[in-house]
Image (cartoon, rainbow, N blue to C red; front, top):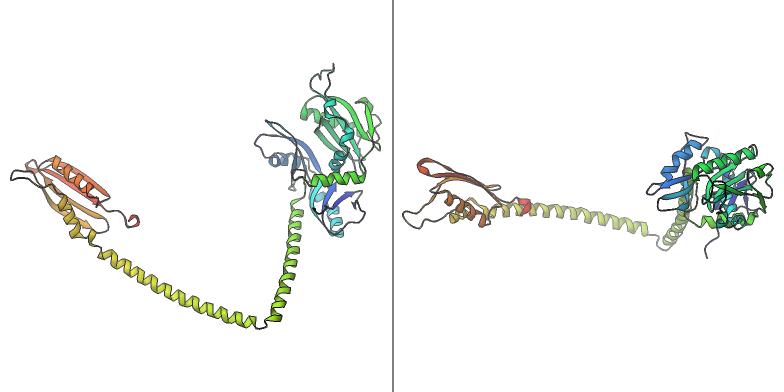
Length: 420
């Protein structure tokens, strides 16, 4: 059975747990919406939601110069793109939260919005999403309607504008805010985000003062979710890796460092126990280990000397083999070229005469000559190629010389040593 996740919430200026006592260790932290920067964002197909949402949230942040760790939760997806709830926790606005966590010795693994856990707990009381699609005569026929949800918390009123089951606006209204004005701004924001739709009703928790909101739509009151249901909603969301997690990067680094130190202490404790046991049984292990180390070093030095001697011998053998290979010696190449010369069949037969010879062992041979006919020169070149001795045979000529003799130059190249 999986270990239960500890859920703590920071509301009313203090940390709270369902059991009343906060156990030191790791926990999921739930915060009111007033502590977060939240915005609904549309993301086109193929775009990175975090990359799209980051500049949007940065423009809303009260600390514009502070980098934000943005998290996105997909609430709707089509072939064209996604609608995501983007949020971030500005670290400069969370110093009191960090102090409270340090005092309770709690390391945060995830940060979620408390209002989302409450919304999950109350989802059954908000009505069927399909019931909001009606036909009317006010210009919204076929477009459906939207619903406004107001949930009272210790720090703020959490406002959600829902188009069916998809939010189109999310806001936090503090006690200093004008509720009617904030509702109007939220409806305008929803209209700008998802188009004009009829507001079918306003759903408020029992402790919300909804005076003056009846002019927008009928007001329906519901019982607020109990603390246990809200914490259960946060715990269920925490089990889903795709849900919102606005844990700041610096807090994540502290968590990783704390986990590393805990593993290190555990490892050192185990290693220390094993070492103490080994020292108790074999007091002379360090001496033996030192002797074995010296022996291995001696073997290593001897092996290094032997390796160098073998390498030098191999280099000498390779050099001797290289110059002992007569298959590419001057005489062998001269014989091979002579063997490919077309042989005259009679006293009056055509012939080829070679009158210059330049041999280089590593490169090849270059020679010049004269022939009675050009055809004889080409026959000679083809014979050199067919011999397979040379990787490349280049012919320059033939060209007419004295007595109608055909002069030519042939450059024959060996293959390089790396290719052999």
